[in-house]
Length: 159
View: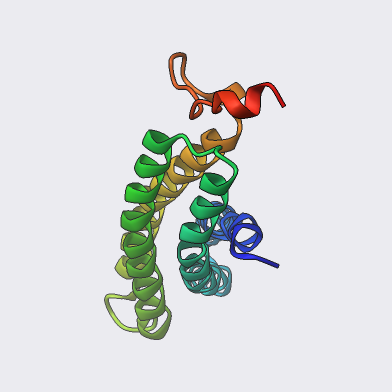
């Protein structure tokens, strides 16, 4: 498996994992069940760890697109810039979740769950936007009007 394939595999974990984490953590609040909440925290930590290979394989995916002349530079740049922010925000959410996990029984534990949920929800929005930008790179049907692929060289058009 090359870097481009690895990127396609790993990039779904942070997005789907964060959405599942929100749902599980909200369920834990609704059920008033700390085990469910702690399960959500474990999912958050796993998700934040999986963000690292998703990010580090992005450069190889970009190179693969450039090699086949299918890299809309403006979209890739926007995706790459937001992905860098998303990497760090997701790591921060993972650290907050780990801190909450180990301090949940303390007096301030219930507040930690709330803080973690709030930053998780904000981070989930960032991750969904990163995924949307990544999808737009190869899925022309979801691009805004006026955003074009790189031009195909004339030498390839007639082959």
